[in-house]
Structures are given as C-alpha cells and as structure tokens.
Length: 390
Image (cartoon, rainbow, N blue to C red; front, side):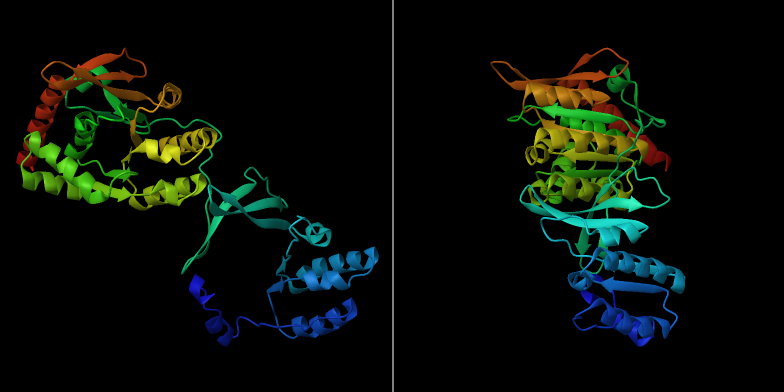
C-alpha cells in the first residue's frame, strides 16, 4: 500500500484502522461468533470484508445464504456506516448472488488484453438511487497514486463552439475568415513530402497573439520539433532570440509513442496531458502513426469522442497527418471544420506545392506557396508591431 501512496501503518498506529485476520472457519456460526464481539467493541464506521469467499465455501444451504445476506445488510444499519464486501470471482463466473442482492452498489473490477496491453476497467453494475449512464470505466493502478479512474469524454450532445480567433493574414482571412474555439483543423500532406510551411503558418497565427499552444507529436521528440519550428520562423524573418522566446513562452511540446499504449490508454494519456497543460490550442503531429496503432472502428470512435470533448472545452484541435488512403482521408475530413491539404507541384526546374483550403460555410480555395510566404511576412510584421507596442 505504501507503493500506492497509502500509509496504512501510520493510520493503524493512530487507531483509525483495525486489521483483523480471521482463521479459516469450518462453519458459519464460528464466523459470526468471532466477528460480532470485534465489531461491537468499537465504534467502527467502515467495515471491510476481504474477502468473503471462504465464508461461501462453508455455506451448505440456500437458507443460510439468505441469513448471511440479512447479516451484512443489518450490519450497515447497526454501525450506521459503510460495509464493503470484497468477492473474488472464478474466471468462469461474474456473479455471487449473496453479495449482489444485499449491496446498494456493485462495482466489478475486470481486465482484458487490448493491443497486447493489459487494460483494467470497472463495470458499474448497480448503484441504488442513481441512474447509470456510463457502465464501464477504465482505471489504472499507479505507484504513489493508487487507483486512478478515468471518465471517458462521452457527451450525449455535440458541443457548441466558442469565440472567434481572427487571422491577421490577408490570405487566410479571405479563405477561412477566422477560426472558432473548439473547431477542428486538418492539415494533410503527402506521406513522402512534408512541407511544414502551412502548418507553421497556422501555428504562428496563435503564437503571435500569445495563445497557449500544446503540440503532441507521435513521430519526433520535442527538440526536433522545436528545431523545425525555429528554423521556419527564422526563415520567415523572425529574429532568433525573438523566435526562441516565442516558442518557450507560448508552446509546450510533448512526445508520445502511440504503440506503447492501447487505443483507450492513448486517449486517456492525451487527455491527461491536455488537462495538465490547459492549452487554448492543441496540435497533434504525426496522426497517421497513432491511427496505425488501432483498428479503424475503435480509432474513429475514440477520435470523435475526443474531438467533441475538446470542442466542449473550447480548445482548437489542429491535426497534422500524412495522406494514407482515400477512405481515411474522407472519414477524417468529414469530422473537420477546416482543411488544408497540401499537394506537390512538379516542374522541370523545381518541386513546389499548393494547398487546398476549405472551411465549413465557405467555398474551397487553392493557396500557393508564394501566398503562404506573403502571409508569413504579414504575421512577422504584426509580431514586430506588437513587441514594439509592448
């Protein structure tokens, strides 16, 4: 228990915990005779039986099982407190009726293998007086923390969006007008050609105005991402010291290996990071890697719930991903509020690119590399103006 952050030895020394080990019993009468004086000798408000399986083994008739159920129920009334009954299920069973009938709440701890990982979850089978809308909840056993329960971000309705984030770049204003807090932006590029310009351009919009941004990468460590962003900002004309200060102050970069978690564990890890950092914008880099770690049905389900959850928190989600297939592109595009799809343009002398931009409610538009560079110059000028005023 100390490894889980619970110092029971200290609690016991203060008289708050009384640990009793009852020897193996041969009949139910011995059990009651042993237990009754212990419970009645002190004002216990919580009594835990861990476990009652040995008691079941000596029960010989249905009437004695009913009597035991009545004993546990009356015990809670007698002490005017809480009675916790721990039952160990055989692998082939998931119920021991004595425990379930007498209980006001029944929680079953389970585990399964998912994507080669052990996933623990609890089934809330009964909660007297309370509606059960979410019956299965994942949990983890963590050192120094104990039992951590993760409530999945499942919302019964599609969340609404928040206030607008206006662009200072003329090209993006013309195409996207603005973005609202809670919207989803998909930036898609060829799998063999990654042009960071459009991605950096959109992130720069937020960084210039001090909007807190979290970038979660499934492909590169934080220092590599920072070097790429720093290089692009300098290329756009931002002084190196200013660029470093901008990234340090407004951008947090986290790297996650999606193959070290199951799909549900990965979603929990992401939300844990988001809740810790509390960003206004969260960018997911290398989404195609995370997608490959799961089957498509599970991935889409987790993705939609996560998107809806972020929308409810009024956090803009920017998803940077390689183009893998028409099917995946169509699915992810249908969940996005704005799309920037980058395509290669090859000429005899160079390889350039164009970006197909679309936002809900507006017509699609093709943005050229030269328009992006002009947009970057506008943002750099805006940044210098803001720093000059400050």
